[in-house]
Image (cartoon, rainbow over all chains, first blue to last red; front, side, top):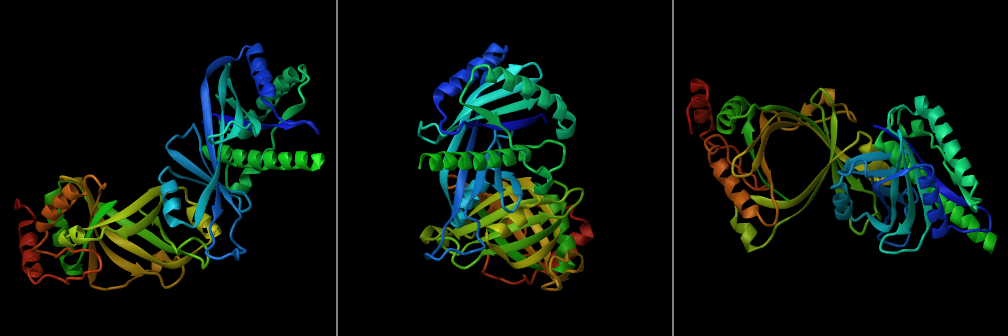
Length: 222
Length: 217
């Protein structure tokens, strides 16, 4: 399957993310001849443990993430970042989790936006919003390269493409930049050949970065 | 949801049962070798204590993993009147690290067993599955190669079919009708209500073995 890198928008210190940035990024994609090619959407849910009495059980994870990805609409993915676990299951696993009543789905975030086609690349730019709300919590971008599945073999061309794209964006002097923290996929038992599990791990990493970024903005304000 | 009945049969009659099922179902039997791990939530996790089964299908070429949750069975006067148990059951295929995932979530291994036998999957008014298997326990953790039978000389027969709250009466009828054909060899009843082996089993098995299952029922 094609591989992708997932980026999040890191605002400059003292600034916050806003929909104007998203609009400008989209304009930029069109300016470099990106052809609109439909919409995309990722749903990501935080599961939190339920305890029968107040005392939390120490070895239980504070939360984990469940998500559905457009590249495998009939599958569901769980990531447990601290344990370096990513699991692929059927959609019915959500029903099982509900019946077990040991974890509750708390917050669902929706990543959605427009997909652009640029030759062998696909660029997806979208907003991060809590489900049923319009409050913008972040901006994400996926860069997908269609012909190759090997992470290593595609590294050079992905670097080149994202370099050109970042330069194009830089000309607009936007208050921040797209950042991609590459997870250590091998720690999750994932090989060089790209799979949807790689995408799930990247989204879990992006979420951790988005939360850290939001917390640093809050601490700057305070 | 699923509909289920169970019964037991002496191992010496299993071959005859296989011949009978082959004739009834018209499909090839499939080999069955499933490592079943039953997990329970640690104390205090969850609004109630919970159980989940992780099934590892060991039949080559590739081991596959399934998560199964069996919920409460249907109750009430209507449920008492039918000879089949109707219960909630949800399954999901999963990647091979799913056991590690549940351990990390706070589930512990309660017990494990190995089912070895054969299965038939076919459509006859409902999507029916019949499994005939010996239940084995492991003397060492996960040592499936050294498993020993829990009830030597006796095997478990399960007939199941998926159902929904809309169609379960038809599924129950289809299953009951099918189970009647097995009556000479074994009696099937709701899980937990053991009815033992049937006295006609030896004679029925002898008859089946002598004509090779060619008799149309």
